[in-house]
Length: 605
Ligand code: CKU
Image (cartoon, rainbow, N blue to C red; front, side, top):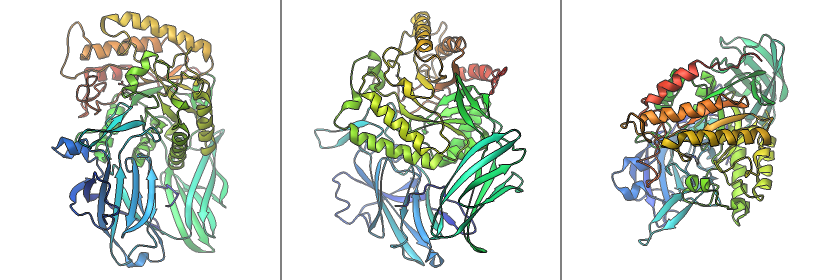
């Protein structure tokens, strides 16, 4: 397997072919496929579109809810002239565990359903002929992998995934699949770190290469003019009068990296990058030295029919809605998103809190509900913890390797709503947070989203975070409906507590909101009605506005989304400000008014 997660491109030396489209698909409940030769051909394949989740195409509940091994396969052509190059297939993701064969030969394995991996098929490809790729995926949940959950076996022998998290366990080939050809000696990876020098900027870069050659780097402005150049695998690009990447006002340069042997070009890689700095000072988050206020959403990759599948159309619509409403940020709750989402965020100037799929670190099927009960559990002191931590760290390394050069990524969220009530969590957090710092050349701020019961007096881990992300449901899970006034009192009490415990740390609200059925409205309001959603927003906003250490609000959720069925959910989570079809609820107009009246960059600093 190849380590580099550079996005596939075409250049003077590289070719990329999309393998999206119809693939063969077959479930393998008996896990017999590998020994029965499915690696070469699926015996009874259906055809399914890639990218997409398989669940919502079918009318049969047993397939929608299928848990276990399943296979995808596709034939594709490798041109004769690629002989002598490194040829690989890059899967944008496979949920959750995958093994890949090319022409019957094993070429890759991968764990973690939300990050890319690259199968090297150089040695088993047929050049100038048709090739076959097969991937076996497993979507079972366990406590040794993330997102965390369990898999139970029903009396009829069928397996059922029981997530410890509040989103549907969508599975399949969710993202773009690319066939790529690259030179054997090549650019393997690169990193950039920005600093400002008056009106100028310095972009220090490092390029990792495979094989011999000399490195030349250029920075082009948006018109294609070269504004800085440097030689060597490490160096500094000095940019005079740099046009900075600003929130909702992004300027993108193109970095062009060439690997050469004398005058001969060996490899060329290019990518758009934004120049900006990000740091935390006291209770402020500073972008290019100026305090920013985050306005936006916790999101999901989730839509009708395609499930968690990548759709350029859905992403485009989401960004248009986020721009319309005056948002400037989002959290990739609860997993790293498709590469193309970050590319669009770079272009549109959105601030992204990039979250790894460390969700469900709470031993309960309804973790998000039970956790608020204050029940004492020690999730990070289990027998499974060492294995889970290994997987967690691997996923962090992969996420940062993939996303480190995106200007939009301003912070890493390393866990969502873990159990922080027991001391045994502290060393786990310390290790994982230090590891993320080591992985990131830009040393971005690190955080995790704190569940309701991780209060100032209970939480044993908040000190490791560079800023706090609070998920708070005052007015919904806590004292909803006619009790909302009391909810506000409790909320303010908690905020006073944070002022004492963490007086010098910024707080971002990474979740708040109320389930709202777009068909229900009532005067006066009741819970679940559109009026009540607005009331909850107004109540929590009045609290945000009274504390100057609050530097952001990301409402839960951007849109209604699918969850496991159950008594807590009405065909999914309905906390969307937009419906699942991406149309506004009434609360959207309230947020638009509020957010458009607030500056992206705070005044008076
Ligand atoms: C959301 C206690 C809050 C847990 N949080 C996590 C998120 O994944 C859920 O969808 C709450 C909710 O709506 O309950």
